[in-house]
Amino acid sequence: MSKDTPDYHRELEKKRNQRLKKMNRREWLKYSFLGGTGLLASVGYLSFESQWLEIQEKEILLKRLRPQTHLRLLHLSDLHLSKVVSLEYLEKALLVGLSQSPDACFITGDFITDQPQTEELRKYAKILGSFAEQVPTFACLGNHDGGKWARENGGFSSNQKIKNLLNSAKVRVLENERMPLFIKGQKIELVGVGDLWSENCRPQNCLEKLSSSQEKKNFPIFLLNHNPDAKEVLGNYKWDMMLSGHTHGGQFIIPFENYAPFAPVKDRKQASGTFNWKGRIIHITRGIGNLYGIRLNCRPEISLLKVSGIS
Image 1 (cartoon, rainbow, N blue to C red):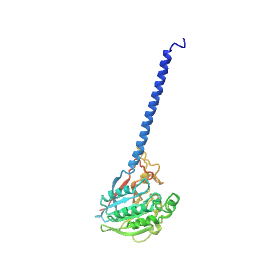
Image 2 (image 1 turned 180 degrees about the vertical axis):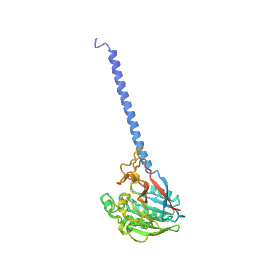
Image 3 (image 1 turned 135 degrees about the horizontal axis):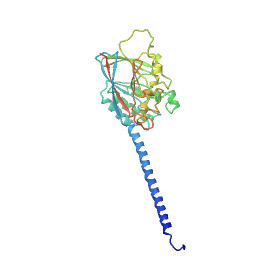
Image 4 (image 1 turned 90 degrees about the horizontal axis):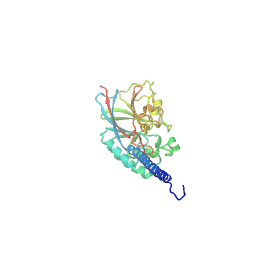
């Protein structure tokens, strides 16, 4: 065939290949766009869920409460003021908590994540103070609130700044301490221990041993303890109900598996919820804040505990 004679078959094949290349490029761009959009949507949802508050109501019966006693106790934890958890969000969460008309509020640590600036802490104290003016509020401290663990992980070397913040907000901090407390005429003993990871959990300073021969008291002991893994240390002491946080409920729960691979505790079977443990009650809340600005299948939780005596 002469070079001047067109080869229609070759031309058709060439045009076909060009169309395929264009189509492949178009499809690649299409699927890349869809994949990127899906990824952005996923990240967007994780961020959205991290601030999608959920109110969890729990009914709890305690033997050593008077039968006619009915308490509404707000349990909050892990507020984690940081670059991804704003003061505005925390104020909103506290207002949601107040809307439940609690008789008292217990906060179980990790008020911050890293090292907030002095001005942020001042504003934080004002928000917490406004909250504590409306409901008696008590707290223990967590591993992020300063001390040995925090110092080694980008936080304050001492927990004094957070204690000062809470004191100025009229939030009563218990650090290896106990105090008598009357709620709606019912006496309880309230105990708060230091954080396990900070090597500051000293129950011997504020609790009696189970083996103690002292006369049995007819009112319950409520224990504030940030990290639920400390139950193994606290198990030999007298208490009736322990409130904890720390886990964030796992923060990232694999859908359909109900598995929390990143829960920062040894006992991942007890990452959130209410449990009967050796004849005593443990309540672990998923907390209000988060780390890294994400949650999956694990919404932030405001816990309202309806605690009653047994008739």
